[in-house]
Length: 621
Image 1 (cartoon, one colour):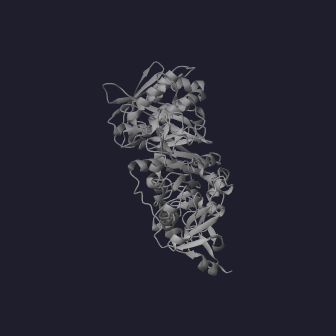
Image 2 (cartoon, one colour; image 1 turned 45 degrees about the horizontal axis):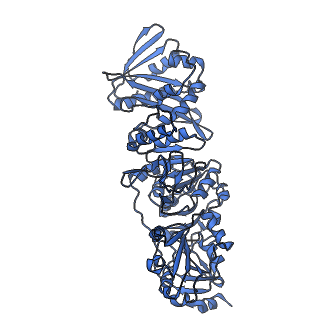
Image 3 (cartoon, one colour; image 1 turned 60 degrees about the horizontal axis):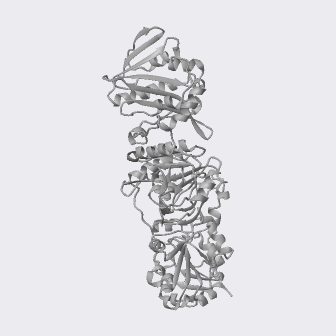
């Protein structure tokens, strides 16, 4: 029988299509923006004839009449990811939530662990070969349809025809219903200032040639907005929204350096506006695949420079990430977070990122917390977490001990919560008893002081203000110095640099003092190769400056660059004069001052030490 004849024979009204659904059966409903609204309404209208009907789906954006409290005897919903339309029903105990990785849901259907008797889906009209496209949602819809005893499809000409592993033939659809409602759309508005600050920080972690995974919302859109200067990015993501379109049109996203599916954008579903749906329609740039493929951590790990960007509701000081619940209140679901976090962690050059604003409830609650709220679930474990990003900075937790984690997370929390978090960390023995929090870290003012220096051979040195989290790197830097360099910097042969002394270096009062660190990338981590600082002298507009550069990095101009940056910062803060003490034998340091000072240097000898003094000046040296 040709498919056109089958299509005609299988066409029914929505009411007739659902009439065969029996009591006590399992019904799957299509996902996200592809929810078959006509069929859902028809199913709800049959409620008086049904009982104990199990409804399964991940988040849907449309109606959910089956969770009406009046219909609890007729329907019971089981959510694999909780959307706003069923959240209160789950909270009331009138619907269920199954926590599970998105990559593993299809196996529940295929093995019969969760039997699907009926799949209600929405697809595009059949092409000339009789194939309908699943459109904007392939995700778990394909596996549910292939596992279902019977499939009822809402045929909608408004559904885009997406390509890839995205098709079902008319042969495999048992009943068809004509529909013409607009495909559901989402609009979450423009990223606000906080989202843009987070987006900028994440964009700094993205290297040219990276492959990205991201979700939907203001933070992913902010990240996309900040990627305009990148090159040859690829996409392998369970989903995306229309914020990706400008990067495709500008050539930033072209997939030319992807490890798998080079030149293709691989995804599982999309949520957005009609503009996005028209963009993906019949577009061979996109390959839509089911989640057992897109979210397979082993496949994700095969991408080089895989960057996974996921959100969280709160993160505790040990690195536990809660993403699916607000205390005991189930809010969303696990989704694909762990799939991609683990996949990116095993990718060569990969970066698993958790992103969240520092506060909630209009700034009254910190999202960085001492302990997760009672009843809160851990989605990404301490062992899985790598990067955590807020608008106040980035904490790299992988391989770090609890003390280092707590210190890093406290300093990307909102400043008004830092001392309270530090007090709890001290009480719990997470940090030293004399550890202090520093308020200025991560602020816009300090961010503006970051810069880069390019050395011979195009090696780039990153320069930024020193932070309390630099203590371990400072310790390593000290013990890498030769005896001569230690003597020239500290005027004695120091043999130890304990925490008490290190804290004096890294816990700055940025209102009057400043310290810069020069960082070089060494493999997958950064190392401090030089430091420079000034300390404002009391009752004066003068500041004393001091420098140290690791032996193997001396003679490359780093000291001069750091002095120029300190001069620029000092001018902006009303400091008029620098002073310095330099050993007479320290010819390289004397050379730096004489070359980079913006005016005449006044000097005098005290023993074997030159005491230097010079005006900060008005412009760059």
